[in-house]
Amino acid sequence: MNRLAVLVWYMGRDGFSHLSSGRGGLYVETVSPAGSGLVSDAGWKARRHPAYLQAPEGEKGPNFRLPESDIWYDAAREPGPWTDRGCDLSKWENAEVWSDEEAEVFGMLIRRPLPFFRFGGLTDFGNTPDVQGMTTERDTTLVMQLTANVQFTPFLRVEAPAGKRIEICTETYGTPNAPDVNGLWSIYITKEGLQEYESLGWMNGKTALFHLPAGITIHALGYRGTEYAADRAGSFRCDDDFLNRLWEKAYHTLHLCMRDTFMDCPNRERAQWWGMQTSRCRWRCTVWIQTQMPCMKTGRKRWPRGMKQPVRC
Image (cartoon, rainbow, N blue to C red; front, side):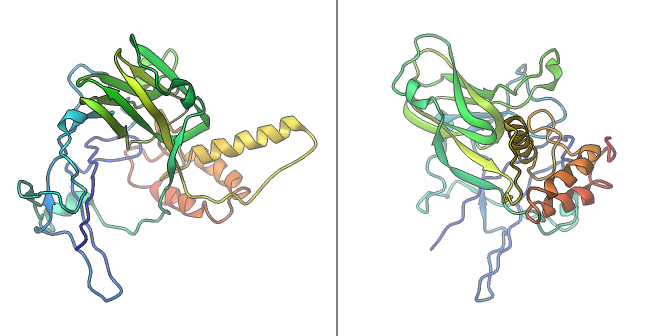
């Protein structure tokens, strides 16, 4: 018998691109070719993942524009191979089923209008070979090179004693002279021995910064690229190298600022500003044609509703 294991992230706070329901939940309904399906109910087992932590009081967090929180993960609290079919679920609780009235906090269910995001395989940073095998002797920041400013999730495989704090962010984390616009970072607390970890909250940048304490032996540092699923169709070439490079940079910037909406920026806000949306829609039509249309339509539908401040121009 197969087993479906799902890791759910309840953000629990408002942002410029998200209004919190005030409570977390999961609804699953599938249909098989035979007509029967899988539906989430009181027979499902649930628990809070013990390794994901609330940020301790006094820790700086992301700015108020972002609905996501920094991800804190304590490897010593891992519950074991909970996604394996043989995992013992005897101490897990049965899921709580809410009435229709209780579920009204989630609003109306709609069919997902966007294609699923693309995720690549784990890839080394450009300078990963330079740091493989090294052991830090003091607090060290490693600046790891990506191919461009991309959306990605960071990965590490290290050997360490328990209780060491590793911090991961990118060069886009902060904004000069504006300390109230911090982006997102990931904090990983080690367990004893050889271990690996992928932080599942995406970030963006041209470089990933790994802040390591003394006593960490690096076996691998890498990342998994992710993006909105748009297939490039348009192109531009001329005999002026500057204009060719400018067009490629513009194309990359447009793609970087697409996710579940057209974003003003992928690090500070991740929110749709309608003034920029209207101009970028015209440019995107010359590059992606049909594959970007779902994102354009979703943005247009979201504009008059679903945001605290629907007009941000």
